[in-house]
Image (cartoon, helix red, strand yellow):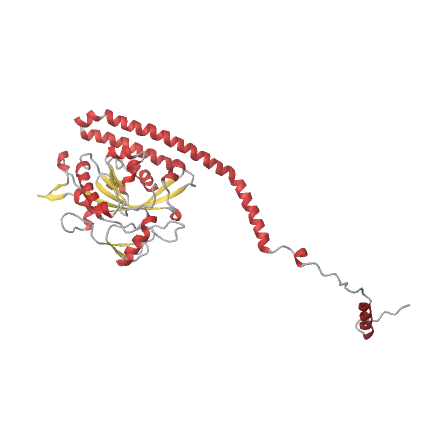
Length: 389
């Protein structure tokens, strides 16, 4: 029988040393397994694999939906092309056929032309409505002044602003039929350009080099076409361009001239607006109004009465462009439009004829601000934008 020394005693230590001397030279005890071979994967690696699997699953689930969006967009585009070919061609043909009536009864001719023009704009508005792009209107009821002459000043964010207005104004009586648009000259070369030319809309060129000449042309255009065609409203985008292109310039100008710092709109330009007011607001002569070419119609026109301050606000500040309006690939959304109308006399006068004067307004923040022109301050907030417009 062999005695086994008790662990921890001097005899046990001596036995261990003897055993070590009898081991083969160079032989080492087996090393423990590397941690990487038996430890679980790190948390980031596991998360990456999980996210990849989820992304792949989402992509596979969305594939049929994306395919349907593509097919729907192609079908809508084909329909729009056919719609334009038929509707615009019909409009032009009817205008040509009715030319004898224009010589015999000009007022009736332009009334019929205006009704057809309204139908065309209603057609464009329906494209967005079928795609789920609807409008919620706020502020003053502009239908109350639909029979009076007015200038509508609108902020500008994208090409879809025009389509949004077409939808909003369809139920405002004959406003659309008797409306004149001021738009960038590039629209003259679109499919709707020929219709706007016939209707009497004005195409304006942007830039300092064209500014003075364009204002003179605008004045002549108003004197020749506004009341002779029984127009009532004028739509103008006084910011002079899209928000994304003008914001930095506007903010730099505001900082330099100690004006309010704007994020969702820009400081409007007042040249075209002053020309419109000077040309169309009736001046009093012996107690009766005399406005532009009103005498040609043989009636006493009250002249331009109202300035309609209009703000278009998109959810999350993501505007709709004309491509989205036509193809309908964006999810249904509600666009907010705010109106505030004021009598032109509230703007005061300066020099000869009515002009825009400094106006103190109060925005939704409750802080007063002085402006060099009409401003766009609806007392609403669009969810997701982070602050009020």
